[in-house]
Image (cartoon, rainbow, N blue to C red; front, side, top):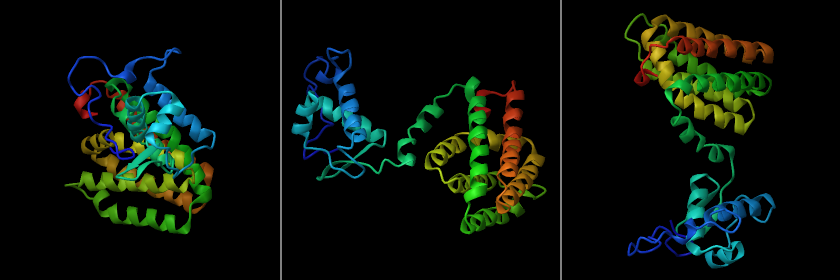
Length: 266
């Protein structure tokens, strides 16, 4: 990562001693200098000093402004890049990103991946709550083009979902994710859509497991998708909400009841 021609990834003590880097030392207020950087840049953005696409001041000036060392500044910038708040451009400094929800909420997926097995059911519950509201909102705002995309997804997967044997579960799951993604996008709420996408991808394995061990559920799920699509076409938010809630509750309840399932299966 290059910030104004400097290399923030070089060792802070050049590997010569065991002295901890300066950024690890707390300030008088108990914050580490890296935390000061995070809070300082956040304040600059929320106060309107920096906006989406803005270039950060040069490293030397920004470090002085925040009252931190250059090493601490680089550490904070790295953290903000991981969070999707900043991005570095080779040889051109560091910029605020678009601050789009899909960028800012992407790190949530990392947290979701760390959930212990006993809390995996919670993820399905959260997903159901979010998607039922997304379906209701989508029923009011979905476009004709989005309806066509959703219908095409279901039409393409129908021969697979209704086959009597040798189901292509990977292809069926890809279609499932794509269908739910269209609805999330049609909700016209970027934060809601980003949260749903993060959860949909991380509950995929459990839904795939259900399809593998319950052949009839694949056909049933496809029928539920068709019913949801019908509610969206009718622009009926209450019906879309109820159908989506039932659709996702099936998976949620199934895994709540499977206390004997091993960790690797979920």
